[in-house]
Length: 148
Length: 200
Image 1 (cartoon, rainbow over the protein chains, first blue to last red):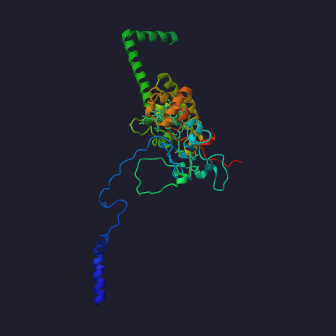
Image 2 (cartoon, protein in one colour):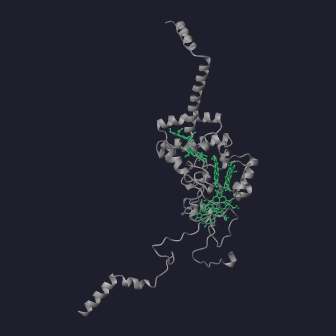
Image 3 (cartoon, rainbow over the protein chains, first blue to last red):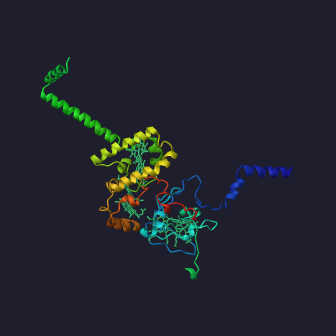
């Protein structure tokens, strides 16, 4: 009898939301911080794309270099790849751009294509333009001194 | 009534008017026709008119909305006629007459689906490229010109090539294809800007 009473009380308290409330005391902070759910979130400041500049130093071997220029409006679709209009082997000299790496011509079976391979076609999968933004998570990566 | 009589009759009829009335009414008619003509020219020179055909609205207009000439930092917009219809009177008339070809193809349904449009796109684009090349990109230069560019305010990729372009006599469309719409399939035009095929 007593056991049933106890269980009943716990259940009722639980449903009344006491238990969740007690548990919530030690809340884990999500990425949105301790900002209440029903308040409007704080708008992050808008960032501008960085202007064209020198190539950005690479941190490790085989790193896809970051894009040191604006890329808004650059179309990449089945019919045309804007990036290649400056980075292809026939265009890079006139454009003063870095020649696209030959590694980009190989498909996954090591066949060498006549131009950029399908798996490297969507450049911005790996190469990204930059804004001046603080990283959300601290990064302590250091390149090996020998390959710096 | 013989032809001569008819002529006499007309003369008599005309005599009823004073010379002044004649001149004035001719003048008035002229204004009406001229006004109507100009009005038609104006009406057919708006974006609204261009996209009244779904061929224009569903394809090029949709794509143009994602570009800098539709929405940009300064809020100045370039519309279809700004780039496609000459401002100067004589050139404008010529372009308008050519455009009656579009009416014909509207009726023929040459590009009335997206598939048909894409299939014809290279040809249409090549017409535009040729036209702009021939006129030294006249419509672009109605708004932009090398002379009024502040090279120090441009990106480093831009000013280097612009300065060289002036020396080499290149024109805007040589380098700025696809500025307002998606480009046609470029496989035939330039194999270096599309995905590579297996080399044999």
